[in-house]
Image (cartoon, rainbow, N blue to C red; front, side, top):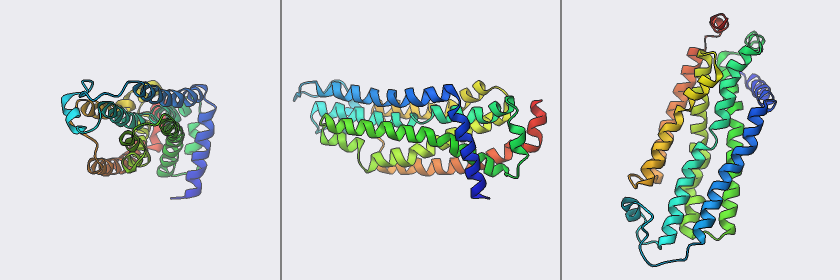
Length: 264
């Protein structure tokens, strides 16, 4: 496997993506949106007067997990934990769009044939496309995350909530699980994109990756589970294995020798 060929594919794919107006618009709007929602919510919570009464805003199961903290701090920790899960989802939209259009779109524009005629292997091609699709979404998600953390310091968020946003557990979620999930969604999009001829269908099928994440958000909202360091470690191992499996599956299903004739 040649690193130089993978880099060449990444460079080509990123340049192609930046010329797409729809993708460029997403790259501007989504980071602002994902930064604004947590900032506005956390700022609003800070305006609530501190009270010694138990919080009635949280489900009983979650309130028990946060027992011992002041009511407003409980709300801050709860919101901060939910926003960490939001940052798992934040980087997915842009990579999924790039990934699904990178095969189907190139076929429609007659740009796939010359690429497949080069010495680039199928593995190099798909890895390059996956990296090129994942990097913009991750970079913008991290940018939005740093903005939220800076804003949290600015509004003097309570220490327990700040620890939820900026601490070892948060770093695992943002810098380990985030890339793993983004790569999972990107590879899914590439696999679907290589088998269909409609980029919108490929994008819709690929976004099924979001469903388990929404399930985690709901489970944590109702206090059914709490994303501890141990649980995050198991999730990371699962995602690592799933990503490795999808890379092998994507290479096996791509079938570069027949993909063009099948789409004619």
